[in-house]
Length: 257
Image (cartoon, rainbow, N blue to C red; front, top):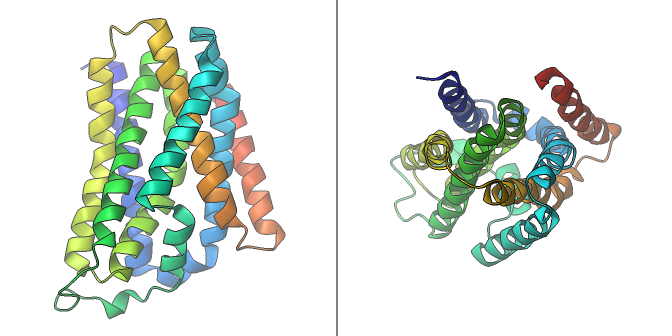
């Protein structure tokens, strides 16, 4: 197995593990995850903005001059999906805030709310797209792949928190909620490996379009989902976390090169 294949496998798997970490925080460290959720979300938003604007956008424009168009299209497409699927990170975090995980065990919640399936489909699609972002970025270059993986991993912990929280909030049994959240986590490495295997012969223009779409998704997630949720924290901690996330993405670019 080549080094690049190992990189894709590692990056995708690490993103999946991050989702499991988010799930663990809800199940075993509820008070901690509630207390620092806004700061964690702010940091994730900063990383996504930094990777999207400082790294993915310039790389995609080198591959195709139409990259800004694809970034806008991706932004609008994500808005359409999220608006019509009724899946929004801010709403999910609100469910998490009101959650008491001890209220929902395997022997109760016999009639789970169908909104849980909507959440599962929305989050599952998002995880698949995360995997595509990692696979596509590694096809462009090793350095960009690492930076894209950093951006994906940064918001996988909040995704794991949101997924398990919304399922439990809507009355799903703990065992079933864990199984569905695990599937969402595993979708990212699976999609990353599959994408990397299929994009070997793509033209630079198409590869640039896919990369621009990835950048648009990063910017959308940060601007539409994470930043509004970060306003729950009124102190300087969230602002500092946002700036630290951007600086981390900026500094990681130098380390990757």
